[in-house]
Length: 495
Image 1 (cartoon, helix red, strand yellow):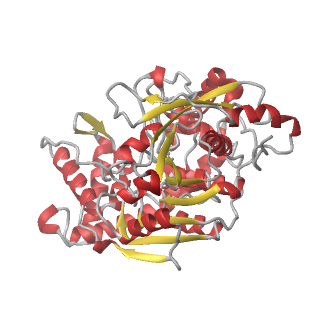
Image 2 (tube, one colour; image 1 turned 135 degrees about the horizontal axis):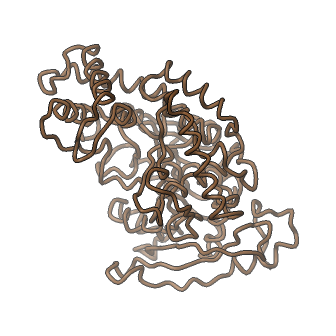
Image 3 (cartoon, one colour; image 1 turned 90 degrees about the vertical axis):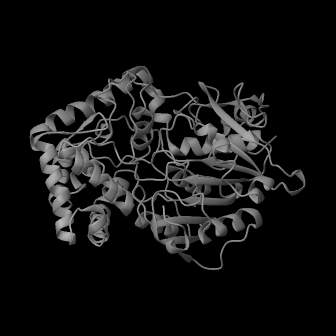
């Protein structure tokens, strides 16, 4: 009889026999879809909705794999999570990353992806939201705050009515338990792991719950476990101000190219004048009418200085009535890193709403969300004064104020597990402070900081860097750097 691992509610002795059935499943692998490469295989795995009652309701997880290319060098499986939460096709990550990972990694690992519970094809959470309800960030204004509260309450009520008790079990801790079921089903004693953004928190929780099962863990663009989840948003407000200051200096030095001002003060004034103009009369850009609040909500672009300047040039032309297409997004479009908890996605299809997958994790994971709307009003007004670029957007009310409590408290991460943390200095989604927080919580980790590095995601970038080399060495040999490292972004080609 197999021993049930720690973290799978070991106190419930009677749960062991039915849980064993989950651990010994035989997945029916098949080509993921008719036009997929033959080596990209998909299957379903059953897990209990509530691990305290494994003989109760079951849900299915969508999993996938691309087997190691060199059986003689095979080390094991590399489970992958590209971020979110709330992605629609995380199980496609092995295919999306296959050509970007070094051959030495592909030779040694079966690349394994999965849709976490509540997302994609794994018992997705749908709440029947309208287009207007299926949104993430709302700027604070005293005159609209009551509507913001009504929106947050309506989203929580609709999800509760549609999904009921299921919501309380869509948590990172249960997803980590699902990962361990996947490990057992694949016949592995340990798993290695590559997690980006939200995936870093999921990986850290796994190392805390199943320390004996974690092999080589690369955590790219990290979440601070002590900030989940409201703190992960509010910590961005001072970061956005610092990025804006850096961007204004960089852009002023290139006044002849961008014509946004020849001093940092003039560059900043150009932006704020555009915000005021768009709040009076929205600016039409790429067929969409943008308000000043929309411009502020897009201010993560300032973390990638060149693309931020290009975007503001587009807005300036549009405000003057010049035909303007939207500038490229302020991230590398080839980087396979789906949205982080802050980079929310929306959809116009109320039958396939996206945001509930996001809310189900960030609201259920922790019980620290304030329940009193007055707290959000106070915090948003305060932070709007402190951090005018983004403070009120980060602190305003969300559906989490009215969400049902998750099935258990959040995980305290405090361990000595081996892990390699990668982080850009100028990351708009998970701040460098967050990466340092995870590094402190995981005392056996090493951290590679990319000084001057811009954007969200390090290992998925197409160009070489010492950070990528450190990760590849660790994955292929198991050797962490002897000490923390700092790479220079100047070592990389410009974007």
